[in-house]
Length: 286
Ligand code: GUN
Image (cartoon, rainbow, N blue to C red; front, side, top):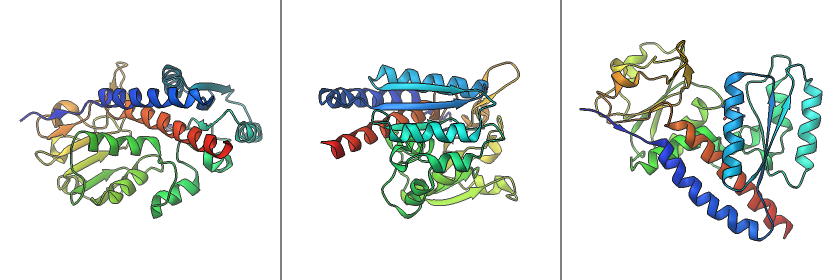
């Protein structure tokens, strides 16, 4: 049996089409959703991500600005900039691309972003609301994973979801979202013993570790849904996920490719959060 490939690019395109229409409607009221992305330093992968985010914003009719700071920028400088953006009425979303250089505290930076403009969903208030089921911005990659599973017509409730990885950006929040969707959730990580025995029980397997092709056919139950969040650059310059696609597609029921799986969904969710923020600001103002 060969798995059905889940096309994240196509699904994201459908979502973006709808967002574009909604943005055009908002623009008639004179409101243009604005996203500002801050990039500190020259990390090549981050540069690509930031460029893609800005390009997609513009395609949809949003205002986007990328502010590039040198690797040597101080934490204070960055905090001052965030303060200015928090007060800027044209800016509805602020995203500081991670990772930051070692001399800058990620926590101090994330804490400084206004909760209402935290379209990344990384601020502790938004994370707390995710935990207790309150209102708030959902982090983009985890939200994209859930949206992709649902739009593919896969049921989540009652199924065993196994998440490999426990990062704040993906592993932990995607586990909470799967729980919110009534899955039975198990989290595996670098200290998990006999991981294969656990991942082989998964109806839905979400992998977010950052190690190329670490999940093989031996980790997967026949017919499982496999969602690969990893983006790893191989020595030959090509991209690979955390899942060995060629091996696992022979056993899984559904599988996401890299690229073209979760990645485009992340951007679609970011744009959706930014639109939502613009709407909220507009309704407060009017
Ligand atoms: N670095 C890798 N993924 C992300 C993300 O979703 N948001 C931000 N701000 N930085 C990242």
